Image (cartoon, rainbow, N blue to C red; front, side, top):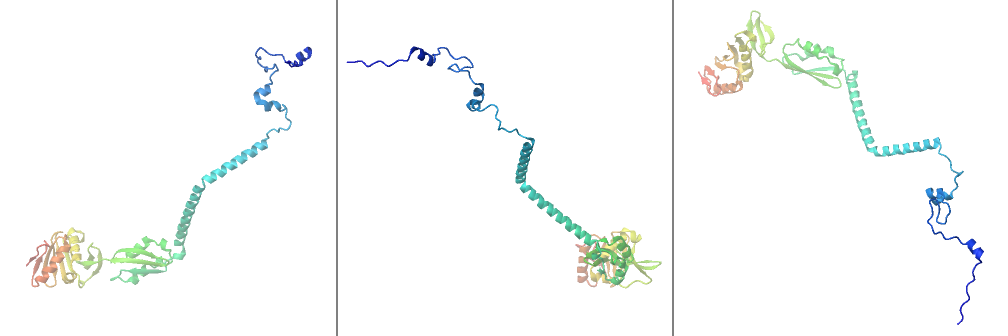
Amino acid sequence: MRRPAPLPTAPEGKGQKDAAPERTTPPRRGERADGEPVDVTEVVAGPAAASEPAGDETAQPTSTRDVWRAARARRGALRAEIRRFTQRSRRRRIVWLSSIGAVILLIGGSVAAAYSPLFAVEKITVAGATSLDATAIEAALADQLGTPLALVDTSEVKAALLAFPLIETYALEARPPHDLTVRIVERTPVGVIRSDAGYTLVDAAGVALATTSDQPDGQPLIDAEGGVDSTAFESAGLVVRALPADVRAALTGVTATTADDVTLTLSTGLTVVWGSAEESGLKAIALSRAMGLNPGATSIDVTSPEVAVIG
């Protein structure tokens, strides 16, 4: 059996030159394994940075104008986000401000109209006058004609009504656009007080309403110890105002030395011992019942309304 021919070998000098010498020691710092120096750019920035030229002439530096434009764009985006997140609160604020403005405008317009000649007094009406002449009261208040309803002077109205002693209280009512109503409550006379000047008609508070030389019909003569400023007169006035209409019509005299011993005299000759003004309502009921059950009685004591004493 024949052996194969051996492979050809390179020449000794040429093979030693082309073949790299085998390294038996580890590479030093800054060298590759094959002994070549290491490129610093490649180590720090990677192969891509090492492959790029160090001085790239196409790169442009950032200008101030570019920075300003970027900042403005960022501010615009920020404002848009703020508007988007605050849209509901801004809408609610607008609604509130609109409502408040409408209310202020309405109030201001109403006040301006109320104080303008558009609401001036053109007619005065007096209500509640029975003994007094309503026409005379309207004439006394004629100075208020032409005055805006909101500017009617209450002090002048009061001064004008003081000329009518029968007026106890009054109230003004404005009826837009041009009417002014005066509601009065007349004093209720309870009797007359005799003096040197004659007979003075008074109410329960002792206010003099009129003075005549003769005793007015239907008005009892009041004899109270201490005059109209005493507690006896005050109690007598309250008793007269609490009497039933039929008893009040027949009343001819009232006497009282203290606040607890009011005595009444009727035109029929009946004497009624009333006592104090307390429980006058119950006493009036007891008196009416006793007079109905005892028409011939000469005296009735209702000091205790539960038990009337007949005499």
